[in-house]
Length: 197
Image (cartoon, rainbow, N blue to C red; front, top):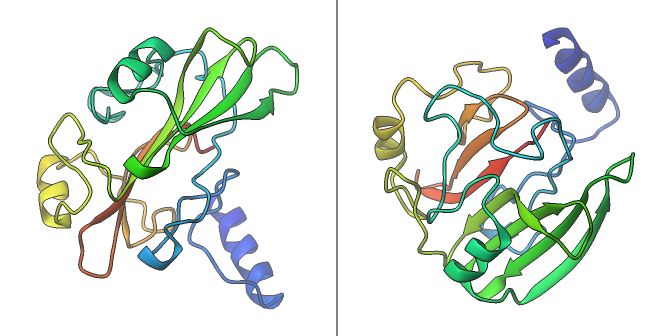
C-alpha cells in the first residue's frame, strides 16, 4: 500500500498537481483558516456505516456527546434544527442514504445515514470548526493547543509519517478516523470523525 501512495505522489508531481501525504477517497476539511468555508468531508459509506466500529477503546471519539451511530433525535435534542438538510445520495446497492445536516453559525456539519433519506437516521460522520464550542470526551475543542491534544491522546495517534499530514493528529484507522487539524499557531482548527477510507 505504501508503494501505491509513493507512486501516486510521483504521478501527481509529474502532472503539476499539488502533492499530498495521503489520498482519502472523501474530500478532507479545509487545511487552513482561509479555506474555512470549503465544504467539509463527505464520508463514503463503509462496512462500519450502520454502527460504531469495533476499534481499540478511545480511538473513535465523540464530540459534544455525539458519536458515530448517534440517533437523529439525540442530535436534534443537542443542536436543534439544522440550517441545511441536503440529500447526499445513496450507496451503490441503494440500501443506505446519506443526508448532510449543517449548523453553519455553530460550525457543525454532520452526515446522517439511514435506509431512506427521511429516516430513521444516525450519525455517519461529523466535523466541527470555529465557532463551535463542542468538545471531545477528553475536553479538546477548537483552539486547544497541539501539545494538549498529544498529551490527552498519548499512545493513540498514528505514527505512520507517510500517511499522516504533519499538521494533523490522527487516531483510528483508514476506515474510521478521528482527525485533529492544527493551524499555523499549533491550535486545533477543526475536528473530523468518520469513515474516510
